[in-house]
Image (cartoon, rainbow, N blue to C red):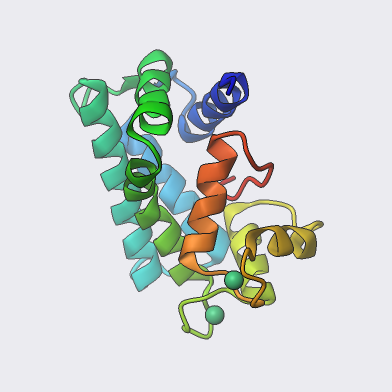
Length: 177
Ligand SMILES: [Ca+2]
Ligand SMILES: [Ca+2]
Ligand SMILES: [Ca+2]
């Protein structure tokens, strides 16, 4: 497939994660992104979901920095980010993508899952969208697209699949803001 769409989405992802807009991804950007999302959920800093979210974003940053061959302090340029993430998507494949992103998805499920059953129902999914800062206007339609097995609940696997398919350019549902 053409990966022009995937590349476009990765550029957008870079800009989103470069919170201070200095053209480099740095650990501080990822800490701030985790803090922004935690604030969006109105969660207290010591709640398990917030701790998991910080851990997941910091691990993701460390992974990307290692893969890009730059030291964690130096930061990751857009060009390196595109190389590393394209490698992840198109060479290493879905299992590697899942390993890199599943802790983030898992933490977001923890933050959204108010009844604690490990799955998101429709109102818990709306909490995900507003926590991330996404509009809730098409929440019901989006929910149906994610709920692949149609059981009325979103599992971590279903959510992770959608994050992955978005970055492959195979689905138009953006879940990470
Ligand atoms: Ca930055
Ligand atoms: Ca639930
Ligand atoms: Ca389901």
